[in-house]
Length: 578
Image (tube, rainbow, N blue to C red; front, side):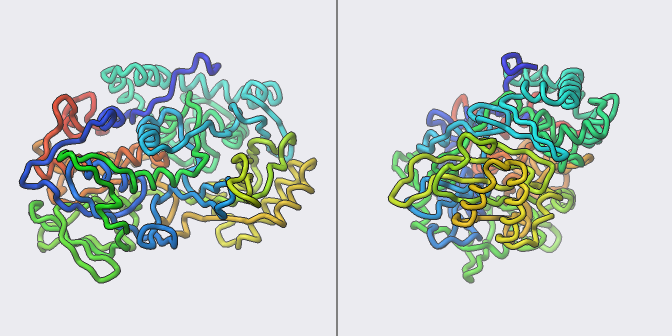
């Protein structure tokens, strides 16, 4: 299918197609507190995208959010780091070059992110992605051979087996109704979306991505075709390292990315986190305020335990690593939920009423996190211009994906402007280098990339000798233990329960059976339907903010129902499987 006829990607999450960007856009608030709970103190645990979005919208609605963060940073507020996986590093003030250790790119369909970015003056520009403008060249290196392509159509002409594999994949998507779901979502025909998505979910939730690629009722590819499609990194939009994921997870990913260009933040995506923190907004009482001011300029330290009262009106008590214990009207917990088993103790103050019900614990304990590793060079100039390395390299060798990025003229004398992402990998590919020191990783990636691009090999080695190297393995980070969650076959019931936690029993019955109606709310990427995207992490923060406001007696502004207000609408209620 040509780009001109492809249905557009959408920011709506097909399992719960609420328009979060419209809900908080153009100055609209999520609700207004009654006088008895105005200025209520709410603990927000985690200063990543979801936590900052929740805190910011709670501030706008009249609460007083207090933000806790475990990650340390000498330059951060109170010695703590804003942003979570929005983690940008500029090594010197004179550099224009920025290394993104976490969130690298964002689909243009991410309206909520773009909306906040506009509010906070965060510049977003087209990203150099594979087979797409403004990338000069994508080199596919597979089985020791190179296929340089400026576009997808170029690759078709260079590799007949790829043409066959990708064509079958596109036909399979059309046959199962995926393209029509894209059109229905874009047209906001939510009744049609729900009907078609139910059919797809019921049919394929137990299928892995690999099974869909191979099965005659899916794409019907040979093993070699499936491997080639995975290595090429297009169409399925993920690597063959994701073959074990649920096919439904892949479809969710495609709905928000296929047919969309990709963006990046030239000044670093950490600017978005800084915007949430420092931007002054107007509260319901007409006063201007910021999260920074509400928190006296400093993030609170890591949380070690949360005591949850069974009576929601009594709130929670948060215990932090500095020995302080403070009571709050409610708490929003946004870090990786794996930390609830390993780093943060959540306790009920009543022996027979748990803080989290058994069904929700089951979902938390069954989460699947994926490893992810990145290694980057910061160089003084874009030495790759005009060579085969000018763009993206996709390979079945150790680096898997490499990108060259020019951030423009340096900000000061002696500043550096170029970044070579030598490797960006997931799962087993990330584990291959997890024990390797930075200098070992550098040597290994330079070895493979020099072999793929011989005309620039000497320059690559020379610049590597003089460059600064940054690397990260997210699975080794104490407060992350993996970059993000992805669903495997059979995970839909867990995913639904995690997403539904913010609803408590506000619709008349517990949205998650057995879940107590206390004042603790889970949010974060783990609770979203399509993880790994900042836009959906932001939306999860808005869900939790809605739950807190409802708990405190707020009602929606006229004509602006929130996500929980539409929960019982059959076009929105998350589906359960037979």
